Length: 198
Image 1 (tube, rainbow, N blue to C red):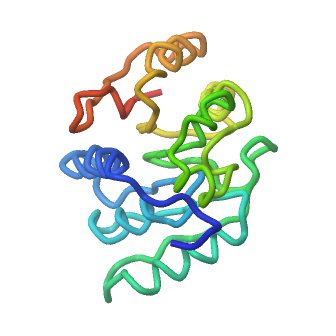
Image 2: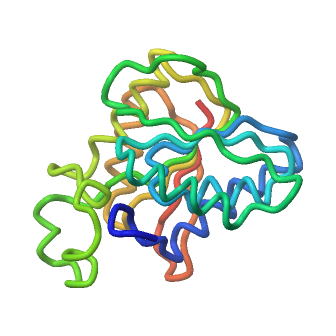
């Protein structure tokens, strides 16, 4: 972890765990990690999901350098190293757009919540990795839009979110006609991961 990336948190382990639960039905999947940051999700899945082919995208080239360093340090012989792509998902998607699984832990803290964060988070982690400078929902809406217009295609979408967001994000997903979903609670019994099959 460097100053350019978000520090991985225990809640994100739930996201990885729920992706790994798909192994029975989905062999050697193509997985896209949107907003990969330090690469913690992509590297964990490359390590633990046999045959998975990961692509990690981030707007920050510094974050992608950290992700590549983490992959080099943590992956074992036989693991498939993720591809890293410098990409702004608010712009039009280019290139391969079809994946079995898309995962994302996007910046979801509302702008007005930033001052309530502990100083070690607020002052030492990159602001763009924490907040979209709005209502915390911008990137969820963009991901749903990309799937609805088939700019991106996937069989499974797994999203991490804050405990205050599930109703708003589910309502947003339904507005894009993604009505079938599953919510998973974290160790504090807070709805944390949303699984949608578009």
